[in-house]
Length: 240
Ligand SMILES: CC(=O)[C@@H](O)[C@H](O)COP(=O)(O)O
Ligand SMILES: NCC(=O)COP(=O)(O)O
Image 1 (cartoon, rainbow, N blue to C red):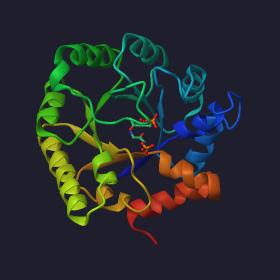
Image 2: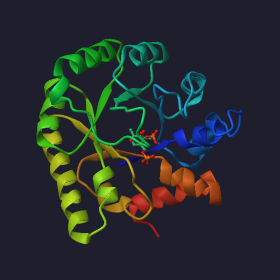
Image 3: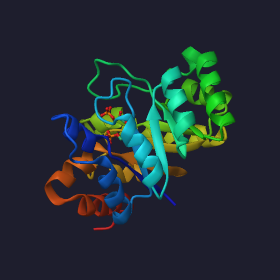
Image 4: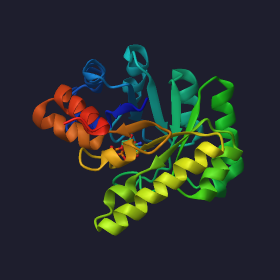
């Protein structure tokens, strides 16, 4: 059954705009779970632009579904993950200057380094997901280093505007999903998914979890987080 991981980073983005204590992403996570979130996703960026270390510690104590910690594959982040023990880690590429995560990990280009990070996390019983573009070489590399999951980066699909381009990007995601499952990987997806574009991705055979943040939190500012999450689940499952 397809699940929804609600990414609460942008609750922290609003708090950090004033370096104050509200809104608290921990409260948002509790409300998200009450509204039907199947998991909570949080990205602890190296520059701490939104989530803070304290948030991750408290989320670990309070999340009742599962906690997906998104992080760069750095020594500092691996230490944090080993201490926090999230339910799974998603390794993502990070650039200080980017507005948001611009592309997937180049696993094929840093196989040894990522292999060692995946090993460290898995040795501590933390399953690992790798955030990648739907490219056959990256999928093969993810299988080679024995990650349990990949998360297909849906950014190019979300940004496509011409109908043919949208279809092409969706076909790339479908092919990526199929190749990954054949290679023994479990498949999640996310980035840039909205109420309007989520359904075709939700329908891809074998898709396990969609991680969605910006669109849900944007709607939550206007209609409340409970309604925003219930409406996203309805959009995923094609319920009007
Ligand atoms: C990896 C990913 O797609 C999301 O976690 C995204 O990075 C949300 O955080 P930012 O908006 O800081 O990029
Ligand atoms: N990994 C994707 C994610 O967690 C949420 O991305 P977005 O919906 O905020 O673009």
